[in-house]
Amino acid sequence: MPKKIYIKFSFNQSLALQIFCATLFLALLALSILFDVSGEVAALIFPSLVALLNFSIFSTILLKRVGDNLFGEIGFIYCGFLVLYTLIPAFNFINGNFGPADPISILQASSSDITLQLWRQELFIFAFTTGYLLLRGQRIVGKISDYLIYQDNQRTIIFLFSILLIILYFLIILSSGVDNYYESYMRYENLNFISRKLVSIAIRFKEAIYSALLTFLFMNYRKYSIHIIFIIIGICIYEILFSFGARLQSFLIILQCLLLYNLTVRKLKIKTLFFLGAILATLFSLMELFRLIDFDTAKNMLSEDGIKPPWELNAVFYSGLHLYQERLKETIPPLEWQMFFNDFLVLIPFYDFPAWNPMHWYFVNYYPDALVAPYTLGPIADSALWGGEFDLFLRGIINGLFFACIVRWFIKFKNNWWSLAIYTFLCATSIMTIKYSIFYSLSPILKTIIPMFLIISLYRNYFNKKNEII
Image (cartoon, rainbow, N blue to C red):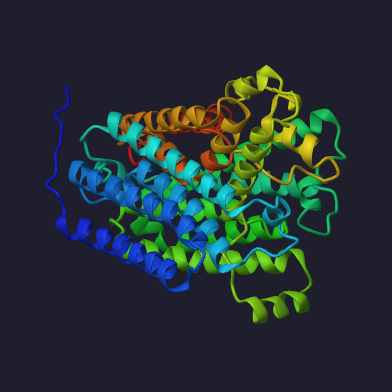
């Protein structure tokens, strides 16, 4: 039975985090006092303040339990995303960033509707933090052991990089010609069924190789520190150009690299994370502006309106608000009961029943003329289809328990290359849970990560040498 490890409460890190949250809290409160006459702004700010306070309390409890490496906690990362997806929509409403053609403006929701939806998001945050703390325990994540870090993995790195280049070439030659961001989602529609499945497998293997390759590189950081920079830049450029401006894959790659650095090289400070986050948010906001319109129009919009937060941070709020409006009006279209179990149905190999996918259902019933499904449905929007706010609370609790199980599993097996790759991949992709469902992680693990990691393990076993121990 391994001995539990406890760590003394880091006052400095806790104090810094609480000061930041308190400053933001007071700034929002000052806005409501100085600029609000009708009380509507205060009503919008209050749930955002509560969400921020919730995050501050949750982080402080984690600091006291598991030490000051908060960035090593999947719960901290995920809760930060949840708060961001609440604060940004509230900020945009207060600041008047939604024009008449904006999807949220088209809903014609009242201020009370918007405020109520912000409270629903805070309810989910509260439920998640409660579930996570109930099961998290007190064992620290800590740094990866030197035994794993100082292995020589050159043969494995060359193997993975070679396979990655072959897959990227395969995806390029099978792609049809596309001219813009939306068409990039349809680039393989002209292929036959078997070819599309091969493309699907290749894309999954590509994502798994990204995760494994980066893990082995960071395990040998001293040797490959320069290589890592060029490989990250190369991957991001490929993903952005090939998709005509899609940013998500590049963001996940960068986030996983930060997590790997944090666990294998040096612990990242909270102020460093805020600084890097601000840079990424600015870059991705500019990319969103320039990918959909011509350069001159984008330049004029930038000079007139400045840099706005990416629309991505409003998407979860939009679909949740829309479906809760439909629920209150009792106008939700008919639902297939199988949709409730979609998280588990997608685990079936070659599963292809779009009628049971909530996102496809939303696309067909509300945006049938769109080229592709324009919006995702996360756990908040899904709860509107079934049990409402009580359903939402239960999803948050289950989400917290599930993520606590993930971090406990990692602590148990952390000194293996595969556990390090899986855990950092799950931390980086935790944002997808907000966008899709609370058990989103199961599908990429079973259908993307495990098959490719088995191939890597077989390769490493076959070429096992003294300088490369598995």
